[in-house]
Length: 92
Image (cartoon, rainbow, N blue to C red):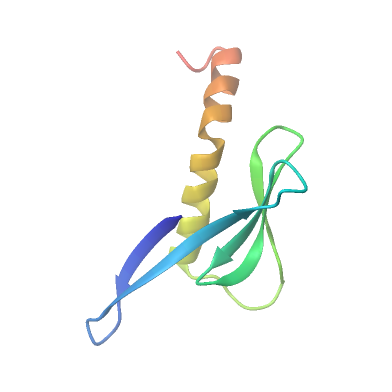
């Protein structure tokens, strides 16, 4: 789980999170939840990296929600990205 905290106008702290649930049926597929609502899926792409697919094309995304999604994707892709960089000579 990844967490982010921010303050309301009244100064109270809110914790929001990104939670992943692995599907036992298919390797490389994770359902993505934000504040207990399913918002999309992380899927391994043809290039070996995870990508994010949204559930809906309506509404908007706040910067903190997008940052959580991006940070989680970076975390999930780090090992593969390090290997790719090493293989192409950019990993030093």
